[in-house]
Length: 498
Image (cartoon, rainbow, N blue to C red; front, top):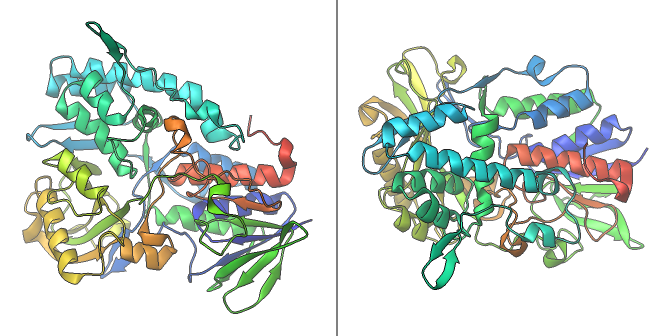
């Protein structure tokens, strides 16, 4: 039985902790804050309850597998998962509105054809076919296996872009998300739809490789799911599973250094000066300078910076949620190019893309005559933008509400209270520098969108969570926990789940 110290109590770290404890190890989690969950936070006021992190779950099979492998009670016995339908409603800059059904390729194609016309649905369906090929080519090495030392295979883009002949010139081949929109989808609304997927994950459509087509493919193939009581309930369920498997938690314990002896991990040092001996250390946070005795470039992480964060406006509304209201509505930017220049240039966009989340969940509101609504925007991190500037926060919140009002009738008149959460709060709550939110790993771009491997050059030190392979997002974080557990239990011979 090995002694294992886990730094951080985010979803990926807790997934690793539960699996390692079941394997017979003595696991202790050290968390700098007063609670578990990492980005899966919660804000409550006067009977209104809001998630402050992800609003939906994709690829729930990752957490079903975690619960199957760590106990007798399956995931659905511990919480209630519901597929949202429609999966999303989209309001484009020209006023066109389309609702896309959940996990139905034919339904999505039909909806796009009816609303956008001119073969739009067929073009989107053909694009998803190509995205499916990219999924088949990269799924295992990108998501289900530890990151190989030889990353050349993942440096090549798996998306089979359409080759368009040009007279006496080389053919056009889409290499980025934006180029897929312009050259393959052609309709600016379809391009905005694809750009919106990338932007929601913190990726710049102008630079993200075509392999980012995996993101809409995963959502539209495997569906979008909501956890009753809010997504925080998933963090609670994983935490309770850890406790049931005898994982120990120490809160208010900030790790400031991973110690080594004889060329391998020896334990961790806490901010209060205490030393903790450990045979293995699992770091469930972004490796900060001075924390790990390994240079950042040696970990092999993604090179793109700065990484965007999330700006939230949490609205307590009077009045009942209208029947048939979509759980998720995306109000697309009036000028997508200007928005991308702002977000990835360290500024605020004037009329940004806003995701409006309106869960039909009694647990989020005081009664049926009120509604809790979350507005979410991808923004530049704290640093390039000073998100502690009160006037800037309020101005930007007003612009976000103005955008959302296009999708929510009488929004301003219904407001009882609004709470603003910026990357500055994310930084304070989670310790993620700048309040940045990691994106999923992507193949292509010569490996620029890969994250640090779960196994590090320092024997005994492993990385879990969104800042490590296979990257950000709840499903990806859960996968990282499974990969770390496999590497610790089976050693270097571990090649991923079969």
